[in-house]
Length: 259
Image (cartoon, rainbow, N blue to C red; front, side, top):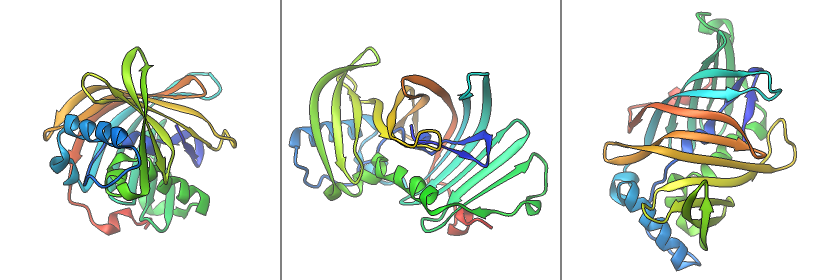
């Protein structure tokens, strides 16, 4: 999973957590009709194209158990994230007495770190580097909500049946604006996980990242994985437990501004 630290080592931005399930807004053409068929069946299994295409904003509340990079222990992050498609994010996390916020309006990204109960005005937002903003926006490129609305920019290839985390799955290779593999349960057509290569502040060269999805629950008729296990270089680095998921909340553009 591609991740970046937020100001201090105690806080980690987890935007890839927000791309655990998929949307589909139209059929379009792809180079591999079999791969497209798997994609369409997955959308149907998650709740159907009409319901998922109607999702414009998302709000996630989650607890994240993160294992420290140096092996010295672990920490719990209480986090909330809001997405407004196609390119707006707001992320709030509290851990060890600090509150971190990272947000982007699609053109500019900001971040802020304050102590719990510290006045917001005491620490202003800071503009993040252009590369960090690009990394945030890149998450959309492997977000299947985004892909479903831009099918003409992607190709879908079925690589056959593969075992993934003890389950028999279809390995679906998605290329175009982003390259990654999605593993679909051959019985339920629900996503079991994804595999991709990415850099981070710790890894300047791309490393293997894996996300495993489980604990699906229905929210407004759409199945959502309430458990996600995140791996980098073959080792688990975070366990995510969704506490609440809401669709199509009211949120203004100003909400995503760093001010």
